[in-house]
Length: 399
Ligand code: IPM
Ligand code: MG
Image (tube, rainbow, N blue to C red; front, top):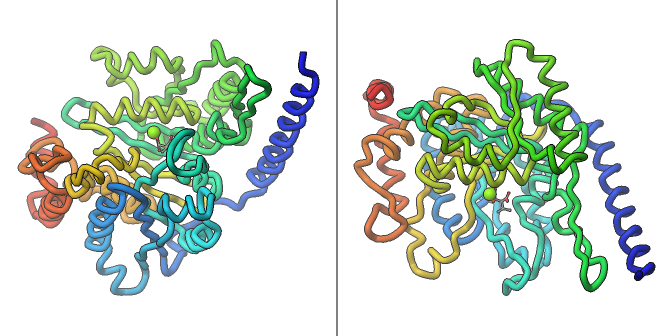
């Protein structure tokens, strides 16, 4: 037995624990929720990202500027690009987020972010940490909120994916113990699971949703998922009017497809990796990951983004202008709702539903057989200003 390898691994583990214990102190001492109605001016930063990000960020910025034009004119909202979160710049600095870019991001309460390239072992880029994951950690964006709505099928799901813990928290800090053994670390904390579960229940309460479902693999991953599930049921006691249940991740992926059961689910709360996987599956029913937006919410900052990657292949094949901007535009709709413009958010969501799921006058195919992202965005904006928007949406949904 290689005793030295064990000693090295033990020391490594000890260091990780020190970092996490300090993080727990910060989480417990963190200031409470920011009140956007008191933030003047509200600063919204646009991070274009890589690959198709540059294209779809430009379109979603255009929609945001259009819907907030009065506020921008009055100076109560500022919308500006933040440069430098590109893979080239991150690779040059060998950092998930270069320091000056991070400092600038922190000057904005809100960011709308395009997909960024995440290198992995063997890529031409240095194997730096995902900047999504780093940003979520740096800004303590603990909730990844991902709605999936297919009104015509009666599906209205919202996923509360824990965003700062689980296998992701220590993703870059695994250890090759010896020539044979590699170990990664899965982390779940009490405060971390409490705050995500509470947010899911609060959402259910405010939006009159009747049921919250917890998804884990607590039968096998007993300690960490076990803690998450235990905390879920403890928090549930504070919300006696809301029905609760829990499922294991494997059967849950099956139940989302089950015609007899899928409409029973409303609000779902789950650890990071299960949330990553399940929300891609859920998005597929809505028309693909290109149609799904997400909100990364923390108490002081929030970042809104598509749920998919930067699709570098579309750029090298010369098809980037045909990328679907709807994921990021959905994220922009969530942003508007989050900072206090529920009417504008609702309008944009209705326009997205009509153009993407019902009228479908234009279609995005990702190539020149379909509309460009720009043309599709124009189409969405035509509906936003249409006096028929509300009635048309209701008509379509009722079928
Ligand atoms: C997502 C993405 C990211 C994640 C990647 C790009 C690191 O898949 O936002 O779901 O795994 O969280
Ligand atoms: Mg994902």
